[in-house]
Each structure stands twice: as C-alpha cells, then as structure tokens.
Image (cartoon, rainbow, N blue to C red; front, side, top):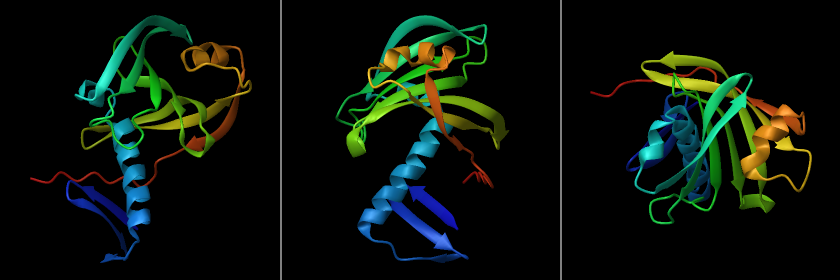
Length: 171
C-alpha cells in the first residue's frame, strides 16, 4: 500500500494500482499523512505563518534543560484542527523535538504526551517513533504534562512506530 499526498490531493495505491476512495476517506487519510509529515519535519513547521509560538522557558527532563515552547494556530491556514494546542520540548543543541504534548477537541477531546525514540534520518528527513501517554488525572493541564511525566502520572497508551519508510526526492 502507498499513500500519496500532493498539493492537488490525495490518493492510495494498492499493489501499484490506484483505488477508489470516498471523499471522507480521502480527507481522513490525507489528514493522517499530513500529521506524520508535520511531526517528521519539526521544528521547521513552527515558522509557518499560521503558527503562534510562546516560549515557556526551559524545563529539565532526564537531566537535559529542554526549550519549552507552546504552539497555537490561527484559524486561517491553521488546518482543520487549528484549535488544537501543542507544547514542544526541544533539545538545546540538536533542536530536535524529544517530547511533545497536545490538547485536541475531536472525539470528546483530551490530552496526550509523547516521548520520541528511534531517531533516524532517511534521505535528509528525520523520523522518530513515539511512546504515546495520557494523563491519569482529568484535571491535568497541557503545560504541566512534563511534570506528570516525571512523577509517573501518565499512562502509556501505545507506541507509534513508523515502518518501511520510503522518502523519494522529486527533481
């Protein structure tokens, strides 16, 4: 299976042949692919015009003082989930995102915290897998999920592992 997202739309191939998808499925799959691309290219997308950044200082996780940045989006150009909010913990030397947290509104909403692992570069693009957590408490706040992580107040939900990644450069 191969998913392709381009400026003019989305399509899926199975065994080298395009398959018909409903518009709902195209939208759902293109949003998923876009999300993977967005996280793969972090922190570069944080300079997009629709992004509002707020520096929250440094926070120490596993003895490293990460830059902590909160990100919100303008509705214009911010995508279908522009009301979601994110916090990123960016390594002070490599500028890679090692941790991220977000609040989301769809499906009843919630909070998530992710810890990156399996960092690798394929054709110049950095990919990371993530351990996905949720807070144990309903009163947790997005900005303090790092403290919840340090105090084991998060529950592991899943591991997000990218496999069989192929990056081709169109010239």
